[in-house]
Length: 98
View 1 (spheres, rainbow, N blue to C red):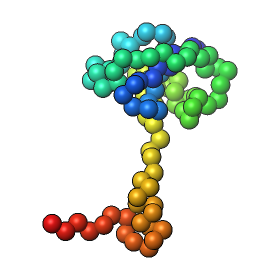
View 2 (view 1 turned 60 degrees about the vertical axis):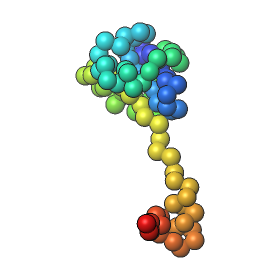
View 3 (view 1 turned 45 degrees about the vertical axis):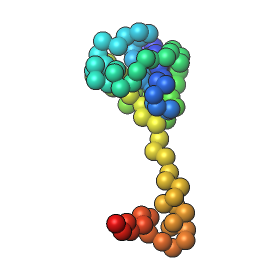
View 4 (view 1 turned 180 degrees about the vertical axis):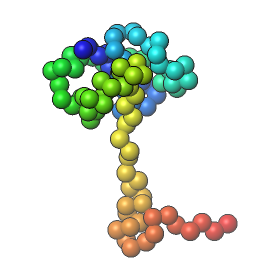
């Protein structure tokens, strides 16, 4: 099974997997408008890979077969301010006084 992988310029680390190049018919219009103009990254043969950039192959194949696409979100970024406050023994969020 081949799979086309697209990235967006709107959010780093967000990728859209579709079963063939240019096949966006199954992707909801709302998602496509938020994703923006898809930029082709690669076309891959799924049978030759176990994991793909943090996506489990079985999960990806299931999504492609059931939904016609798979959206990979970027990993959650650490809040460095919260980590610093915790290292100082403070609460993650300062009390806001107005």
